[in-house]
Amino acid sequence: MSKYISKKLDNLTAYTPGEQPKQGEFIKLNTNESPYPPPPTCANALMDEVFSLNLYNDNNCTKLTEAFAESYDVSTENVIFSNGSDEMLAFCFYGFCDDTVPAVFPEISYGFYKVYSQLFNINPDKIPLADDLSINYKDYLNKNATIVIANPNAPTGLALSLTEIEEIVTSNKNNVVIIDEAYVDFGGDSAIPLTKKYDNLIVVGTFSKSRNLAGARLGYAVANKELIVDLNKIKYSFNPYNVNALTQTLGLQSILQDDYFNNCVKKIVTVRDKFTKELEDLGFNTIPSKANFIFTKHSKISGENLYLELRKAGVLVRYFDDPKINDYIRITIGKAAEMDEVLNKIKVILEV
Ligand SMILES: *Cc1c(COP(=O)(O)O)cnc(C)c1O
Image (cartoon, rainbow, N blue to C red; front, side, top):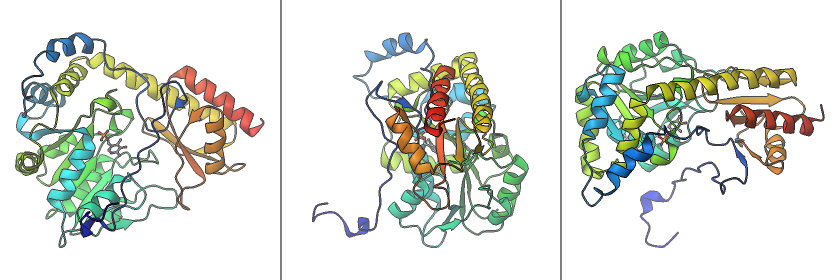
C-alpha cells in the first residue's frame, strides 16, 4: 500500500477470487463456471463485430435488451446490463444503502456483499443461517433496511421459495429487496415475474454460470422501471460503456440459442444429482443443491484436508476457512467424465 491511498480504504479487505490456474493444470471445480463453451454461433457473430470495434459500443445494449426482454417476458424498460453481476451488485449497494439505510444479508453468503459494504461504508446487519445452513426467511421480515439475498444461496445451494421471497418483499415496502439469482437456472424459481407486481424488488442475474460466459462479464438487473432509472443514473455516472460490444454480441447469441443453453443446464443438473448420490454412498453428507455446485462434508476428513488432498490429486475445489462451514468443501459440477474422475480420486483419498 502506498502512503497516498485514501484513509477511507484503511479498513477495506478486497474480495479474494477463487484461484484461476493455468489451463489444463487442474480439473477446475472451484469457481462455479460452466464446463461447456458458449454456443457455436458465437464465433461468426463475433467476427461480424470485430471490425466495428473502432467505434464505441451501444451503451444501451439495445439488441441484447430487446432479446432478453422478450425471452424473460418483461419490458425493455425493466432491464439493465452490467459488466458482470458483481458490478450490478456494486451499483445496488451504492444506490440503495447508506448510513441511515443499512444492508441486511445472510452471514454466510456471497463474499462480495461484505466487500461492497466496506467499500461504500455501509454497516451491514449479517444474519446467521439456521443450523441446517438454510436461510430462515422470517429473519428478513420488516427490517427497515436494504435486503440482499442470494437465491439459491452460495455456498450452500439452498433456495427460498417464491412465496417466502414475496413475503420478504411485501413486509419491506419502504426498502429495496435485492435477489441475486446467479444460480437460479439450476433449480430455483426466478423472482423476475414478481418484479411486475412490486416496485421494491430487484432481481440480479449473471451470464457467468448457467450461460457459459464467465469470461465475457455480463450481468443484469430486472426491476420496476423507476429502479432501473436509478441504476442507470449510477451506471451513467460511472461507466456508460460498461458492457463492451463483443460481450453484448455473446449475450445475444446465448439468448437466441435457447436450446443450447437449456441443454447445458440439463446436463449439469443430471450430473449433479448422480454425483451427489455417489458421494452419499461413500458416506458424504451433501446439502441438497439447486445450483451448479454441491456443498458436502465427510466425518472422516476435514474440509481443509479434503481440499488439500484433492489439490494434490489435481482437482481444484473451494474450501472456506470459517468455523461454521469448515467441515465442508464446495465442488462445482463439471462434465460427467470429470466428475467420475473426481469420484475415483476421492475414493483413493478416503481409502474406500
Ligand atoms: C458468481 C456469482 C456472482 C457474480 O457473477 P459475475 O456475473 O461473474 O460477476 C454474483 N452472485 C453470486 C451469488 C455468485 O455466485
